[in-house]
Image (cartoon, one colour):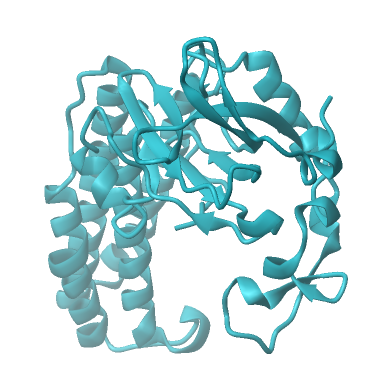
Length: 339
């Protein structure tokens, strides 16, 4: 077990191996936010100067230590701040000014040698399936230890550097990617894509389609509720009800349904996409029935649309049951990385 307290004062951090390749010392902290749907083990590899990937046992030990850590209890949030990382304090100091040794426990990190390229950059490579990319760091001096934080979700990898031995979490773009990011991934993470390395997860298209479905469903509900006043608990005229339901149908739900992806090379994902399309078609029908009944001022027909929306929820439950076979969840906390 290394001690990051000792690493700070270690000199001669650049080493030359038998092959003549220079390398720089780094300490990596790993936050494993994956699920059984796309775990690190058997999928993701991290490489240093050694051509072999870092042993999974080392990654597992660091990730478990990070998960068990109580360091988040040290954080204090200050409301009157710049709205960014400066809002968090540790023992009265901004987190960005907090030393790694005052925040992390030694067992949360592991040492690795990173090869130095011709430009003098220390290079870390990560692969997941066919996908592979590099992260390059500029050592401040031959004696400097580079501190790296890696956050892994089911869909992406985010890398930050802890500069100057402090918990700055400075985002680092990946380079030299061996595969282009998929269209679905770029649409799902438009702002983060320069910093999110895409994992080879066949469920990314479904995640995008379900995200679009959820947003459209929520937007349509909010739009139709407006005519009923606060908490969607008032009354409205049939003409108003017909108008908002027609607009929700024409402008929100139908465009969402028409833009759903319905095929994947992965059979299990294709089935999930088809189930989602079926649910979207039913939702289109529900809004059509709602505005048609309101147009006709048919109270019984309008009230009956509640059963239609209930059927949508039942189909959603059925979809959730199907997805559990593959450790996929419709709901839950969507973790965000640094970018």
